[in-house]
Image 1 (cartoon, rainbow, N blue to C red):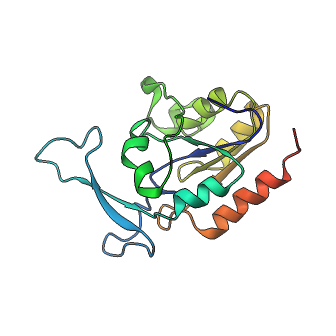
Image 2: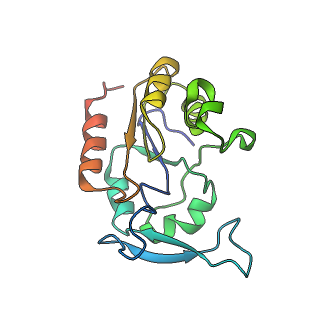
Length: 180
């Protein structure tokens, strides 16, 4: 359930939490390797999905002054496959209209990332910060034009995942919000 007193922190998994673009032979420092079989990876002939997760991220995210929400194609499976490995409780999930996801950027409203419209609809004007590796200036402009509250689209490198400067930027943005 959404609490109107805190801004939302919308969390993508692949990129911010799982630095999938790091060199495959060089796991980033602080990360642990997990082999997973979420939906789409359950066939015995498929190799399990390799996911790198940093167990310090969950506690660090919980220290931020946000209501945490999954904003990922992992959807509710993030609560099963990701949250336990990084020390997060079960979180709410931004729901997706799967008929529009994923798709080419140019096929979305205003040339945006496919998640962008869903994020705006779901947030319903509430302040939010969104960490992801797939949006760009087009998405920032679209959110500025279509969202009635403060919003921060914070890009995280899929080669490194969340780093301390990312946590610092999120905390500073939340601290600068006007009090309710």
